[in-house]
Length: 511
Image 1: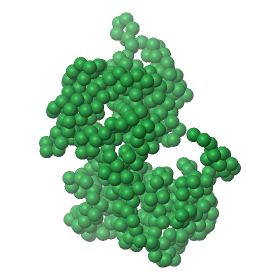
Image 2: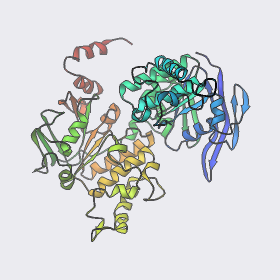
Image 3: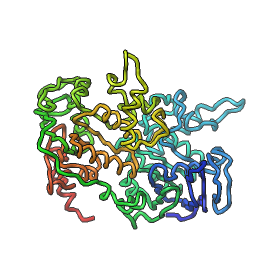
C-alpha cells in the first residue's frame, strides 16, 4: 500500500460566527489508503469535507496538494484537482440518462459540436462493467427510477472517469441493503488498490473497523487522534468520540414490575406465524434476528398495519381490532418505524407540525388548529427529549438524524402511550445521540412505559433489554433472559432452519 500524501491539512481552522467548527486540524490523506473520519454530529466532519471540496475556505492553516500549498476558489477547482465528495444524498439529475449523469459537462462531441452518443454510451458501458453494474442499469436508462445504491454508483463513476485522486464518502451505507453495502465495499477496495485516497465518514463503527486502514477522530472541532485501525477497537473509538465507552452508555434501571400491559397470542399475519409474547409495564423487551426474520413485520402486526390472519392482541386485557393502526393509537400503542424519513416524518414541515400528528383532539378548538395550545403541550416534551433546534418551527429536514428521532419520540410522548415499539431506534445516528436515546428509553421504562426495541446492533440489544425474543423465518425461536442473553445464544437462535451445524463449524474455526 502506498503512503504518498496526496492532500494534507495543516492547522486548519474554521468558524461560523461564535461557533468554532474546526480548531487547528491537521490530517494527511494518502494514496491507496482508506481513512475513516468519525465524530458526533457537530464534531466538524462536514466542515472538513467542505473545505477539501472548496465549498469553504479555511480561516487559518493551509491545504497542501502533492506537497504544494493550494487554495480552492470553489468545488469546480477542487474537482479539477481530483477531489470529490460523494454526499449522503447523491447529486443526480433525475430526468436525463445514466450516461449524461456520469459525464456532465464532459460529453464527447463529434465534428460540428454534436454529442457523440455512440462514444458516450460505450464509455459509460465500460465503467458499468468495471464496477459490476452492467446488470443494474444501462447507459441510456433515465435516472428518475434508480435506487440509492445505483445513484451512489453514478457519482462514483463520475469521480473516477474525471481522474478522482481523493474521494470522500459521507455516510454511504445509510440507505443501502446488506448486499448493496458489500458491493460498495468492493468498489472502495478497488479504488484503494488503484491508488485513490478514500475518506470514509460513518457512524457505523463496525464498518469502519472492517474497511478502513486508519481512523481519525474529531470532537468539538478538534482532532483527538489519528490511529491505525489494527491498533484500536470500537470501544476505544467510542471513548475518544464521546468520552466514554459504548458499555458505559447504557443507564442502569430497576427491574420491571409484574403487571402485563401487552399480550399477543398466536398472532399470524401475511409475514409472521404464531407469535405469542407478553410485555410488562416498565420492561424493555428486545427483538433480535437477522435481516428478513420478520421483526419489523411483528411490530406492524401488533400496531395493526395489515390484517391479522389469526390470533389476538390485547392492551391491558382489552382486545385490539385487526388492521387498524388508528385504534391501536387511541388504545395506547405507539410505533417508531425503522425508516423514519419516509414512514414517520413530514420532512418539509416543522417540529411542531410533526409532534402533534397523533393528538389532533388536544390541539384544536372549534375545529381549528390552536397553535398556542400545541406549543404548550409539545415544548416541555421537546425540552425533556433534548431536541436541539432553534425553535419548534424549525423544519424537520434541517435536523440531524438523532434529533429527527427525538421528534418521533416527542410525538408519541404527547400521545402518552402505554406501549412504545421502537424499530431500529438508533439507525443512522451518531454515538453521542445514541447515548441520549438510550437514556430516554431507560427513563421511559422507569416511568412504567412498556417498550419493545428491535435492533440489529447486538451490543444495543444486550445493553437495553430486560428480555430478548429472537426471530427466524417469521417465528420466535428463543426467549432469553439474564445470563442466557449472550451474542452466541442470539446468533444461534437467529440462524434459519438447518444452518445450526454451519454456525457451529464457523464458531470452531481458528482465525
